[in-house]
Image (cartoon, rainbow, N blue to C red):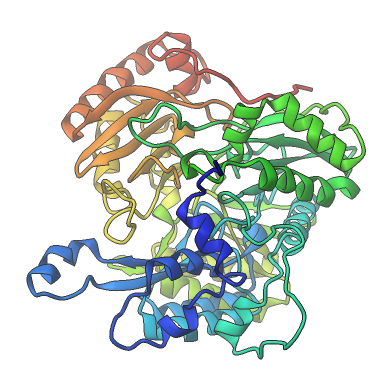
Length: 567
């Protein structure tokens, strides 16, 4: 008897290479929504249908459909944005969306609150900036992230260039995006095909990241495919390859779990595109297309065996991977303030809480960043913005004589919070969650400010205000905020209730573990108070919070730690 594929596999197979009936459903004026099948296909074009869950009950009583809107995500490999693009994105947010830009943990922008009749105009406006939304979501390789660390300018340039090349090389070949959103005429005759992805694309999403040691600011071991740059005598020798990372899980299902990537060898730069293509090819052929919960690469590796997968990869490549070379990570957060790069240009890292760029009382961030973009455009031609995977922003490649003007704008618009904030606030990440994410079980972004204030009070009572601790909050177990790599993490279970997880490290090499399950705020704070007291009284010099919890037995050792070759 043939195996029954998942419903989404059927939708993809019947979609005519991601076209579906999107043109027809977008033209329907009766509803603000699109069909379920078309919503699945819309993700491949960089957008999700959502609704305001705060208004669901009220609208139901009024016999109205949900308050539908759409999130749009840019494909922005390496997270680099010119000043002109920033100004255009900001204008798009104000004209077509809810007025805010959101920096994501995948180093790109999301626009929220776009209604259906504005969807096409918004995507076309984004495309006019020379940025598209193709494959920003969906069962394909998504936006490729790269280290934004500005300390070593040549290393960042290498990482960014390879992120861009990977992203372009692995794009779907269908012209559906251009026909639907940009009014490209469909070419008559000839059979369209996807040489890499095939007619049903990948079993699930696929994520690639490039890290530059000693900074792991992209959490390379959380990627399906991670490339770790190996610099020797200041030159890029190549990359160590890590496969099988992934953050998603499902509450109550032990067959789903987060996993750290496994380092499998070393490659030269010339081999990088081929390795990426063939890792994707094996996952395309071997991944689970029956049960989507088990369809990520991490499950393929664990079901088939890592050695078996690597052997098949090497067979397709036609060569054996070289042994991994020495590297070491010491940090996976962002370093705030001004830093001088190796080329004499200056880089200013700004903290953007939960990645939300908006104007608020005392914090006119959107206005301030518009004005900074103006300074960059007027100063010279190479100033730029770099988004980070920690939802922050770097004003990069600044000439020394432009720093004073930027500093004045930073102070005027309240963008200098990193100078005053606690260490835990500087390293906190939260996903969007309620009210727009359809998967959210609890609050995250909206809860973060109140939660931080209460945790800061506890830390202050134990003399730990300056202790750098990674806090990550997720509205559900899917893990968009990479909660399983937080020294402290809350993973939503229901409104006001979370799993409290503890014990990751500050380098992104170790998963945390559940400390208390399905508890409310009072219990969360009580549990943290206990471990903060222990940490304050018994920690060793320069010992990280997660490392302390592991050493003292507050948490048990995790099942595995990411492989690291120490020089």
